Image (cartoon, rainbow, N blue to C red; front, side):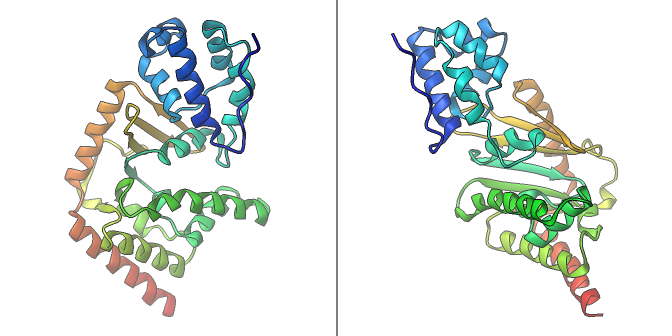
Length: 279
């Protein structure tokens, strides 16, 4: 009997690949936990692959073909499903973010990507890649602005950002760029499109001083946490690990200014940048 046809790359490859995995697993009479045991992964990981929130790697795809008897279907199609506009270390997190119903993020030194303006993003990308061609920077800016389009929906995902005061005070670009970036955040907060808290310097030591974290919840898959450093990042689905970082996030929100006071601080700093620009 011939194997299944290749997935249509014009559709959503990862969602289609996940649907095919669910079909093949159920046809084999296996639960997510049972399939996970055969592949030495958790049942929740299988569920995330089926929901399209995790990326299927080539080695894992070949193991699926062997266990489920799907010839080389998953090995053939996982490459198309893995195509992304984002850096390798962030691609899976960005694609999961687009499917999340809630995103909670702490940013230590930068304004979170979903809240950035084109000018701010350009300054960040240029700092990361000082010798890159302008066209390459344009592509990075366009990709980040495309990510932010998920906020065009008036209700989802629920976005809750805790921004370190350092990110507000570090001049990224010029004063004009910072003023615009902070006014944009204030606008989103005033329109009730994002909950934003500022973690002030006076809060002192806290559990996320060494990096940034992003928690993501889904309707049809277990939650994830993404941890990011300089040109590196990892996505975790272990329930105990996710719970550990969720506690960290709750401690950060408890130490941060209230949403109301944070809005006042953001608008005041934006005004200072605007005055500096005119001076």
